[in-house]
Image (cartoon, rainbow, N blue to C red; front, side, top):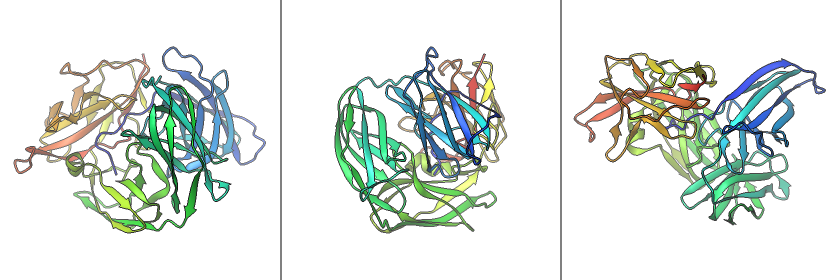
Length: 423
């Protein structure tokens, strides 16, 4: 399900490819350097994990940066997403944000270098542990640490081990999520600057939950779209729980017990979930206890962004050489106003958006306009050189029959509008 308030993309990365011999005839190599965005110092011991770019499932490849911040790994050719984590630093990408795809080609070297932002959480420790199926370590399991109103996620490696960083001091529960499996839960206490070792978590096969329903299209053409279940709080997709609709219906089986958010049409496909219901009621939640749940979605055509924005086929940010970019989009039929929102790499709104009680449209643009200059009303924060941002447009319509006197009729794609400031 598409979020109304999407988190912004992580800070910059560089991807280039060049020829390289690899001893495995089906492999290519990914290498790069992990640095601190404040000063550019190399970061050692950053955990680097690879995920399948199609369904965000773990790809069972992982490595870590050396003392010089460099890493290198040989993996099967394909397209991957990369997640990087380190104690004392925000994860790359931030929670709920799709990573920039990395394409690995047979016999080629892909260079993917990243910058990390220091975490603002000072009283934090980290949790390590292991997830087993019986007595066998289980890789690719989404691992969730929850408690004190917060949720944190990680993934088990090929040895079934996980490490989850930057968890504030307190008491938490730890559990694993994977299609077809239910999980035990263990409790853990986290102390400042200390490693907390969780007891082994055990998976049991035979999860029987089912989520199914219909997808309706409002004033737009019908297409097949993706539907996923994700963990509330981290927006991490549960491995194996993404399906494609067929003829306007979907069915997702082998769902483990738990409470999840449901998403439809997350990928860039010129469709978005009807935003009015989300902004008023939030994203749909399903609770599974070995039962079946019916859940329907309504989708509409997306507002088309022009510039600055990545292309529909990629999530690589475009470069912008000014801190006052001019945002441009296509007119959306029936709109009375447009609402703009710009968010930074950590998910904070730096200009505009929809928030408050009652909900208020912060920066509104007349329907006769399809451009606006950043911070034109003086209420925004200054954009920073070297930082990545995301902007969205919401199409709004006056409606006296609504409690707020207005409603949203569309929005731009969540994985569009990515740009990086570079002087």
